[in-house]
Image 1 (cartoon, rainbow over the protein chains, first blue to last red):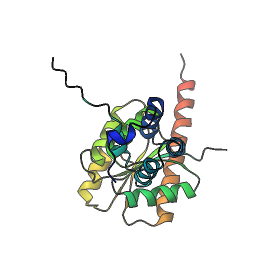
Image 2 (cartoon, rainbow over the protein chains, first blue to last red; image 1 turned 90 degrees about the vertical axis):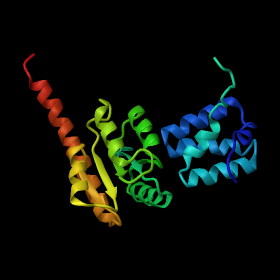
Image 3 (cartoon, each protein chain N blue to C red; image 1 turned 180 degrees about the vertical axis):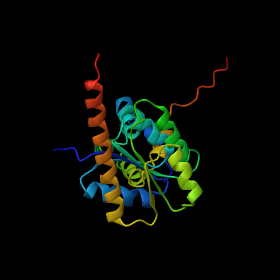
Image 4 (cartoon, one colour; image 1 turned 135 degrees about the vertical axis):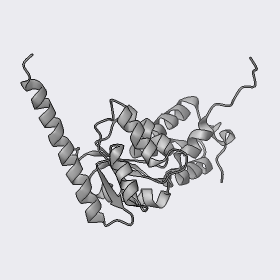
Length: 74
Length: 141
């Protein structure tokens, strides 16, 4: 399953921020702890994230975590 | 003692990165694993490791570029970088040394050789740090 921003929308903003920071730190235990918290919100999402983390595919998760571009033109 | 050393392992192939990570973890090192040069660079600068094991051939930012940028930052300038790569022409090794690598490991590598090189460079860097501290303190002010 490809990860999308929509799938991450079920998570509280704080948890998303911690997931982002943990992934950028590359600290395995810290990442695992955040992923574990996702289970309580959405077990399918938890599974998807776990598989991505197993393959070190942090860029895919970070990309989905990125805030949507707003369409405002300046 | 928690600290055998903090190592940053960088390889764009998940299986290779997993192997490298597992070998180092089993030996007691604290390992952070990066699948891309960008992630590695960001993590290294915000929390410098004691040593970097760096794959050369990676898309977007290759190992040479990661090494060059690590050497350009005060926080990571003195962190030893060992290149891990399958392609090892002499010219490529020379290029690696020129931009600041301390050693090379050729893939496929033997576990014991990899660990021996890691241990040696962690020790050398520790010695250099002690020497530098002593030398600075010995200077008349």
